[in-house]
Length: 314
Image (cartoon, rainbow, N blue to C red; front, top):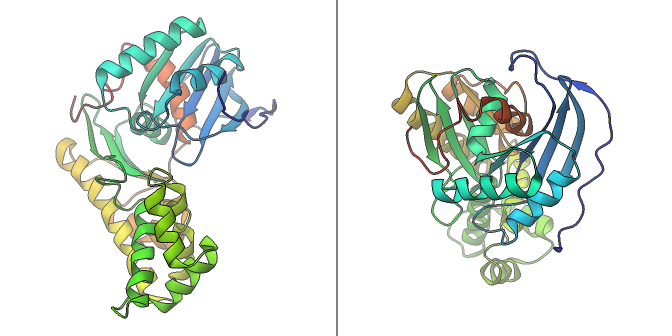
């Protein structure tokens, strides 16, 4: 037992897989994409997505009862194989141990890797490319047909530039600078107070009292991207975020070569960020979301498994 709220109901509504992914997919394949704002699931049977669910967020570094939460989701799916992408999974040893324990408890093969690898599989299928993901956190993963490389994904304390958390934190800083008479933006100051429902003193106290609750800051990102059309400081923050995300893509390209780029996540759904990011990288939208990529992982493992989570280059 755990205190996790039950996943949202899925429903059997067959949905064709997008063209360009792998060929026929046998069995009932469950893909799980864990994330900082939510965990998303897709069940594939007979080449169609027959069920989707949403569950609470998970992170290998922050979620204490990670294995029991994942098992609860797996057991409701009646799957023949499971693929899981998890943020914060940086240790190959921990990855293998979690994979083995889940497979034993679930009674079916379970394949585990970092969320960047499953995001890339959704974006390009088995084809080479670079995917940049920008949700609560940020990072990039690339595959050239033989080698894998990663950039970013270091967590909100040491990285995650361009992420929703980074945008929200930068916006709060702009609001604080305006309040202190040091620049910033009056419009951002008003918008942050309105969106958070508290004055800045209370917000600062809450953030420092609960530093692991990243959503408190990350949820402010849409405020900034929406304000960018009318406020220069907000637009500059959004463009800086796009620049940071483009740097992640270029870091992976330097390691692997001039590969195509795709991008996904809540931050890149904002036109002001996506347009600048696409201008800098030539990026295209992904073929499918990461939960579909997680399901595809079951067909690539173990012979063509992504590099173990935590490796910089394979």
